Length: 380
Image 1 (cartoon, one colour):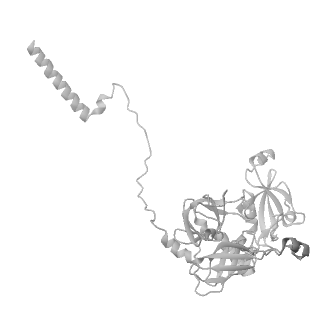
Image 2: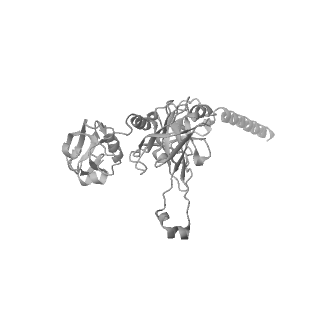
């Protein structure tokens, strides 16, 4: 009996040792049953991406751009109370001195010759404009020209050795790019805030007639209007213009006019004192999928013409209400802002092809472009 027990214990010891070896070297043998199939999964693994260190500071960009950003202080004479000429009014209410209306904003020096780019609403109606540089110098600003439809204006100051900002290519901006906003928020003095480009091509906001905004979450507050939106290298990417806010302060949604647009308007104002834009005399409306289905149109995108000015350029070219404009001068248009910008870019007195969808028929009409009336409310 003792010999049998010794043999059994030795067998168990060998079995445990063998199990230990198998569990250590070939664990899959313990989980694999006869006839079973090991499932395989195909996955795509990206190669390791080398980490790109973010700049620890944007001081170089701020240092490069900030000297060209100025503070603008405006004053406007108060409206005189018409009752002040009435002696009885003065007897009961006395002489009521009126204080001038004050305004604060920002601007950007764009040329060593003293040209300053800002928003039209910053200097609109001002009787006196004072421009203050970051180095402490001050100068009186003279209005060169204004363009209310894009909310841009150009001033001129007479000072020596002026720093001028460098224009960047705002068309190359991408969502996620780092940007800095430089201006004079709430009149506290020059301030730099940082953020990213949140969106591009924002329109239909009801701010300007011509809208193609850069949206950013860089803090923009009252007083920043007319200031610079620059990239991480300090190049001008836009002119800060407006914010979305329920409190009057920054909520992370600010809008800037692209530098490309601002430069075109600036050069026109300096050269001619006003901006010349094309005009064809139509009332447009965005084409919705429901409209396209209702009218059984073969196109899904375009701009529906709801009205045509009698005797206007579009009318003379044969455009009719109900036509759907799909392209202007070779540029496809899918919304009213796109049509407005495409037509505005045309030169007056030039002839441009406009492709319209009329029912099942596609037509190319030649329109002789006219000059857009100033601040026209109708007949785009």
